[in-house]
Amino acid sequence: MLELSRLRHNLEAEVCKQTKKAVEHRERMERLSEEAVLCLSKAIDAKDKYTNGHSEHVAKYSQEIARRAGMNESEQKDIFFMGLLHDVGKIGVPDTVINKPGKLTDEEFALIKKHPVIGFEILKDITEMPGIGQGARWHHERYGGGGYPDGIGGEDIPVYARIIGVADAYDAMTSKRSYRGVLPQDVVKKEIEKGIGIQFDSTFAKIMLEMIEEDVNYTLQESEE
Ligand SMILES: [Fe+2]
Image 1 (cartoon, rainbow, N blue to C red):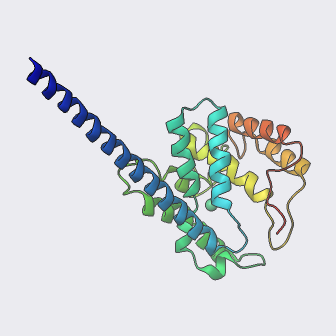
Image 2 (image 1 turned 60 degrees about the vertical axis):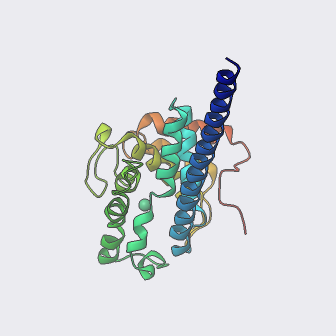
Image 3 (image 1 turned 90 degrees about the vertical axis):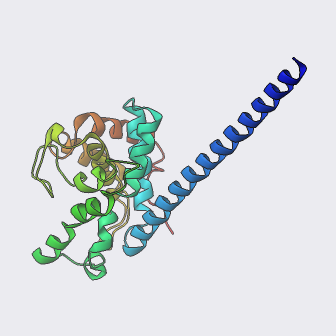
């Protein structure tokens, strides 16, 4: 009996040790993937000299919108990654076009408009996170139609892409461009309001408006550097 009890105790200790190891390994792998995605998003932003930390901002705003919309933690994490990678397709667009200070020609704009599909193609083979390319492909669609690349509208636009669309527009307006500074908060607010049902899903645009309302010191903008 004593021997049996000793063996059982040893077995339990071994199971405990192995489980701890497996958990540590899983956590390490998760951290590694997160860091790799973050690095990639920084590489995307480095290509564009007018966007400073854009991908990370979009990821954070999208996650917050998702949280306020009642999505669970795993969904929030997914959208954070999708936000980080939404512009990954810009890697396939010439730097001269991305960084052109003046107005784009039709041909140049056509090249820019390719980035959602290029991004989707880059991301579509990530089997561990199927759907990661949704944000990349559909973040320039418009709720009322008329966006690109597929010209879909309403609920046909995947929910994550509808959220990223709002966050992306917000960050574009609250970041400096070669031709303008950060837009005043009331202007940004009006633009989001104007876009409800036309450019944006009303649920998520209203959440963004709520976030603007709470941001009394206008901290959610690109800082002066
Ligand atoms: Fe984009």
